[in-house]
Amino acid sequence: MGNVAAFFDIDGTIYRNSLMIQHFKKLIKYEVIDPYIWHSRVKHTYNEWEKRYGDFEDYLEELADVYVKELKGVNKSYIEFIASQVINLNGDKVYKYSRTRIDWHKKQGHKIFFISGSPDFLVSKMAEKYGVTEFRGTVYQVDKNNNFTGDIFKMWDSDNKQKTIDEFVNKYDVDLSNSFAYGDTQGDLSMLRMVGNPIAINPNKELFNAIKNDSELSKKTTIIVERKDIVYKLNSDTEIIKGLYD
View 1 (cartoon, one colour):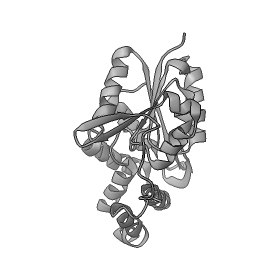
View 2: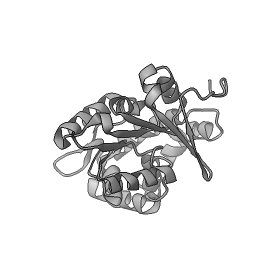
View 3: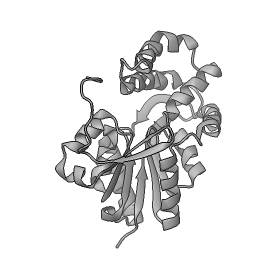
């Protein structure tokens, strides 16, 4: 038998928000990004989501597009300084269930991997904080002067997460049938399908329906919902109220 591993998404799975969003806000504070960009390009979509008329993924996608463009030409060393502040302020704002599971996996001697769509310079600091085996995040390319080029290698989609897990499996001799994966969106679907113990934490509608409509995955997936001071354990036949978010 190989090693047992735990594969964690970060945003919405461990961290209760998005690391990139928090970093974006700090970049505005430090005048790396003009506040006008926020008001003219992103604020409307954010307000729609905050009032629950819009979708969080739409807001995040729009913000990510602006984020990548605005970082072009900025030196990475300065960005990493701000990234450290983001983790210092937000690194403990995680779901209690996820924090407990990370501790449990450590006690069991399992390999722990963070695989996140957030920028690698944020993911690396979160991985260091929680002492994980290895990590992968979206890679923001830099030129010879260490300035961002505007090119990225994304890690928020299901295909690239699957390729990354394949890499870790080979490198660390991982037994997927006894391993665990934790995610909250459709981008984590491949991770959940690959392991014997998939756990969806506060899944969005798209992921929930994907699990529900996959007979094999629905049988083995645990669905966790953490709200206020209660953690609920559900299964895929849990009834959802339709029409509210259609």
